Image (cartoon, rainbow, N blue to C red; front, side, top):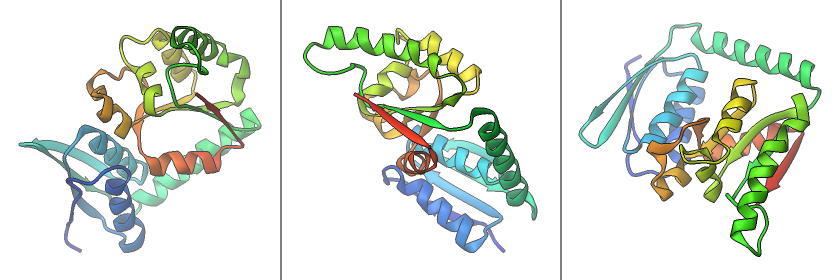
Length: 207
């Protein structure tokens, strides 16, 4: 089977990942080339392909990023087994999975200065959830908390080191011009966010 090329340039989240997902799951492609035109899509597509057992390389061609992916006959199964085993082990340890969705860099409304202080305090106190804390996903203005000037960057990095999964919305980072300044967590898309909220035992939205 020849290599399939997917042109996802000009498409917004989560369309690039959905196109790749369709090629992987419905046609069983072993070799795929994907064209995207922004770094958020590049990271999302790359992460998805790696999670499905592909070896991935990328290069920039002008304003376009080209992702070349290849897997052997057993790549997908091996990756799936590792993912399933990892999730099963974590479930056995934590008992349940709590996802915290942070939609702003302020906690509550009324005064942004106070709201900023409250959000910092909240994120620093999340550790009290212990091993039940599974993922923290930042969307909209919440992505501002993942950049190098964030007052909680050190705490978020410690959460990540301890095994908590952190993600920032790629579309949101692009919107605010912060993609290059993100210093913690991966870049995610709406498909992954929907999937995460479905898998979580409890979702807490903070805004």
